[in-house]
Image (tube, rainbow, N blue to C red; front, side):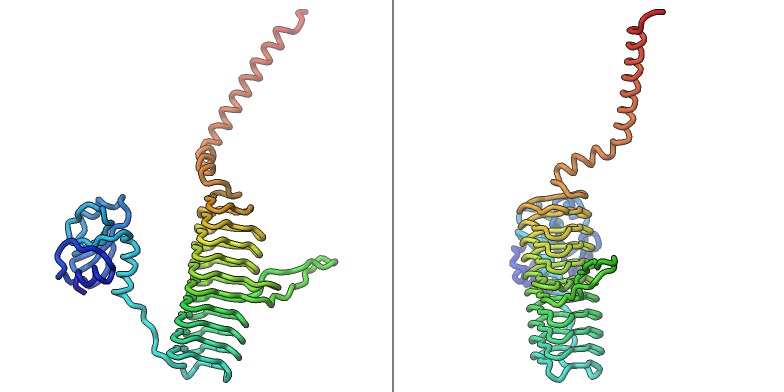
Length: 348
């Protein structure tokens, strides 16, 4: 693609030769002639001088690079769109594979692709242009919207509702039983039937082996635009707001409500029945045991304000030294007190 055409497609201003032919997108340290690279963080500007790329995506106010430049207010977003232009997603042809098992009353939309060894239950509805890769199980009464991509080994349990343009990476499980038991008088546990709704709204993406549990009553819901990484558990009865981001290995316990635009780093744990305010941020490995106000940023376990956590972490490293100094001071104080007592005691 000519660089000027790429600039038009990405809504960037062009500095340099618009006739340069761009064949792919590459990282700034590995780019070669014919490549487009990008610089979104000013701390990597030193690498720009050595790049062999034919063109680079930069901020509007960035210094002149040694090659042609596409200038954007958000070069990282422009980079993402450039990757999509040069690597359009592959999709299998429309149709139902001969080795798929599809219930007679399932309603399959136009342009749908269903791979081998897919099982589709009674009363299922699948919208137009959705792709279901091999070895997917879709239970009775499931509703799936338009333009979804459902990768291999996904299991969508009965009556789950999935919106439009949802991406489910390999191994996602929607609608498995929530963790609900009642202790009997003899100390054993009775299972609480988990039969209520699970709803995944439009434009959600769930990473590989992520699970979203079904509650006994009410619903578990992930609202539109949320993006969730691999190996995340969303517990039963949880509501996740719009445009939430969750990195890998996050766990959200039952009946918690997560506000719009919240961000959870990797391995964050959230206990049940909390309210996480809009725009809150939990730093990686935070243990959130109390509700968070909108815009809060917390770290540590139990999670506290991240600024306080940073101050505390400095002290944590010094604890052995501080302990030794306290012990020395206590020993000196005890020695002084002993000498004073000796002087005060009556002579014999």
